[in-house]
Amino acid sequence: MSFFMEVLLGGLLAGVMYSLVAIGFVLIYKASGVFNFAQGSMVLFAALTFVSLLERGLPFWLAFVLSLLSMLLLALLLERLVLRHLVNRPPITLFMATLGLSYVVEGVAQALWGAQVHGLDLGIEDTPLELGGLMLSRFDLFAAGSAGLLVLLLSLLFNKTRIGLSLRAVADDQLAALAVGIRLQRMWVLVWAVAGLVGLVAGLLWGARLGVQFSLSLIVLKALPVLIIGGFTSIGGAIVGGLIVGASEKLAEVYLGPLLSGGIENWFPYVLALLFLLLRPAGLFGERAIERV
Amino acid sequence: MSQTVAPLLSLAHISLSFKGVKAVTDIGFDVAEGEICALIGPNGAGKSSLLNVINGVYQPQQGEIRFAGRARRAMQPHEAAVAGIARTFQNIALFKGMSVLDNILTGRNLASRSSWLEQAFRLGRAVADEEAQRAVAEEVIAFLRLQAWRHTPVGQLPYGLQKRVELGRALAARPRLLLLDEPMAGMNREEKREMSQFIREVNQVFGTTIVLIEHDIGVVMELSDHVVVLDYGRKIGDGEPEAVRALPEVIAAYLGQQRH
Image (cartoon, rainbow over all chains, first blue to last red; front, side):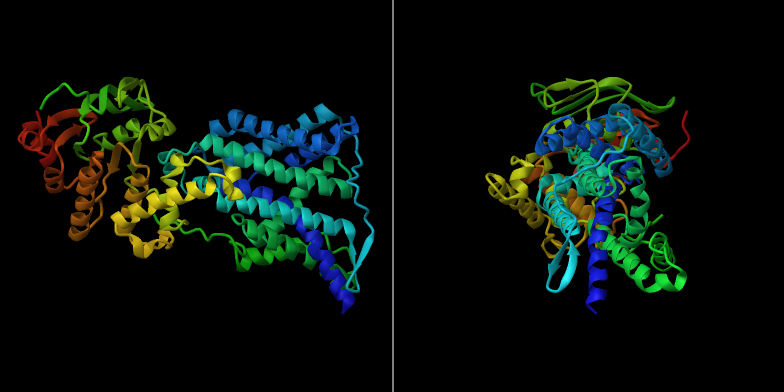
């Protein structure tokens, strides 16, 4: 039983890291209806900027602040150069634009900081910690804690401030948002910058685990099943989706793996996502599209 | 009427076209402070386009918009909202997933004085500010008798009530000029009577100037101080309701008689 619990908790903690990537998607999708394929590149860009600044001798906090500012700058440029010109275009156009964008962002990151793999040490030892008879990864606990804090801050921003109300308004009806004096462009910059912050945190945690390198941008592929299971429009959904993916892939690997000759961890989430697409296409927390014509 | 007081809103030579298709051609009219002005005309006459020009959703190719003493080539939506112009839409543009109260609170968007950091952690001015905005929203809710639906998601309300919530959101901004695009479209007689009553009260109690688009000519004659008639993007009548009703062009355009 305690082995089962260990696998389950380990999976849940790993799932938090998936949630973190998925939240970046949800933020932008909610506010502008854009599926931002470039989220992975943004994670990479943020992590690479951070680690490069750190290697040049900057203290941790300064590197963090500067990386955050670079994400804000990126958001400003994106809105000015890309999004503003694509207002009212069909979603597929915007999706294609973010697809192109992901290569540009990756290219810029490479041009700025070079292409080598960087190690990132956040000063957290990845040693097991015994909690009530269960062995848990110290790093996973730290990652889950950081993610939890970030989600708490985001929910304060979204639910308790006028900016949050404006963001929800923009997500709901852009024309109406304009009429009450909400500046759409400013909200887009804001939401992309916040997605940048989420990307930075995700990039640091994933970077510390896998090393900061270009394959980091591929974690978008891990976020996909999370989004399909949790729904594209709910931060809560992204969290629950991440937990489900994390826990189920570890449990499947341990208990089903031996029957299927192992290695099922990598594809199991997609099978789960496929089941959701068949049975509950809007995901657990997604809004069902109701359109009256 | 004395002409010594400058009009609140003055449009001059407004022309607007979309890729060569003319929506509005050389239109000009004045709206005096405190009046209810109705824009009438057949479908496609350019009425909604004109409202969109006034609150900055469309930028006209030609003309000048003078509002509250300031002349502009064109409005921007945010500028219009800051200057005190609020509006409702022909096809209700509400935040469907939000409650009635939250929808109306978005109307207070520009009045909020505390920063987002203060709001997130309920520090400094945030608490007093929040209470002030809520007080205004509650006033609007009481005025429009929406108390029973305060926390209902707007998407679940019947059409007539949604129209009322949209009016409430516009009122929450305490506008100087209120633009109403077909506030009574699709309503039954009872709902129309109620909405007319609200519009008249807004005008009388708050002194809000109102420009509205309406098809029901009976309602227009009863409600408005001033009627502007459009047809094919041009102005064909402008004056007091009785005078306008008697114009032959108006009769022709409205009854669909043969012209020329």
